[in-house]
Amino acid sequence: MTSRKPDEQLARNSRLRLVRPRSLATARRAVTTRRTRTAPRPPEGTPSPAELARQARALLADAVRIARWACVEHDPSTAPLTARARERVAAALELTPDQVRAGWDRARLAGLVELHGDTARPGWRLRAWDRDDMAVLRGWVALFDAWSLVHPAPGDIAPTAVAEVVEAVPQVLSLLQLSAGPVPVPALLDLLQQRVAELREERCEVPYTAPGDAHPAVPAASGTAPAGSEGARPPGAGDGVPVSVLLDWALEGLSAVGALTLERGQAATLTPLGNWAVWVKLEQICVAAQSPAGNIEQSAEDMLRGCARLTPGPARAEYRAWLAARTVSGAVGELLVVARGEDALLRGLAFEALRVVGAPAESEVRAAATEPSLRPYALLWLAEYEGADAEDAADILTREEATWLWVDTAAAVADHGEPQLLLRHLDSAVQGTVPALIEEVRAGGHPRTVQVLVALAAAHPDPALAKAVRRAAFQVHTGGA
Image (tube, rainbow, N blue to C red; front, side, top):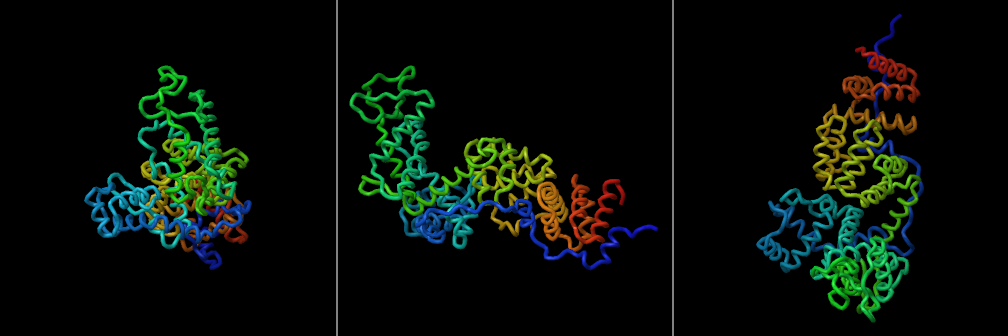
């Protein structure tokens, strides 16, 4: 006796219809939904995210007004604001040209505008500015990270000296955060001096200290070679810059972005925003240091495997720490190599890490959209990068691309998840019924089709459906219709 074809057997049973369809954005997250440690809480007394966002909006109010005028209301064709454009903006918004220039720079650094060649477009943070507190806080943190660009160092200081101080400033900020109150500038100077000396020692440089000078000088930009190197100027040349001068510059820069306040130049105190930002960065370092595989020092593949059991927030912190230790181009290349591999879970996580990279990854992700195995992921990435909400981005996929992504995600769930996750993933398919899903999965040609159908049959509690899906898997395996 011959059995009915799987499609006929499934179609006659109303229980086998798919229910509660969910978006593909939700389906992508199914495989990484795990029980993990609870998120750490900020120090006692830290304002709520809503209050911190209010403060950040106040600090960036001019930048937002300028970005909206330039990118939304008047749509300039070129990214840099010309002198004439600055005058128009200044007149329209009742600002000075210098305020417009500063606000435009802040808008770019905070991600309110994005540069695409010579064209400026409104960034996703600008679109979400009034409704998404975390988008506002992330924008301010981006500005905070760029404090040395907001307040450039004097031109007569050597770039190497500036780089040393920028690298040493996190220790200064940590002291301010741990002190939870005003810290005298001399104490900050001692710490900065010590950290700069350690950085030079790591490079085997021995700084020259003039007689009677308690603080080593750093080289000025006028062609000075590091002390102790061949061609260095003799002692007493007087062209060094004291570390105290660079500390003053750093404190002024951090104050300019709203991270700290200076009390008559005698003491510094972190603002609530600055205190929160330093705490967040310390937590990110702790997460990376405590990860079982030591993710920050691992290859892209090992890093992604180490992040597989983290919830999205801690995982993004790991991605940022890992990316910060590498060049952007090298990191993007490593992530795409992993995405081309056989592990579907790592493919999805690689594109989540690429979302953290943002604009610098655009060209390579656009090129990856030509590869069949990466195309759905790349198209979703590009849609979200261009401003689409994650829940709506899946609408840009064709039915075939959506089905391919469903199978790929199901393969990741089957390899790394639990049976109930696979059953929940079944509801996310774009097809309305299981027969339609199986028919289109067969036609899609995904290399993991058989394994996915077998895993689905093994997990499903309905014997009729399990039998029919298993038969479909056998037919795909043997090349049957």
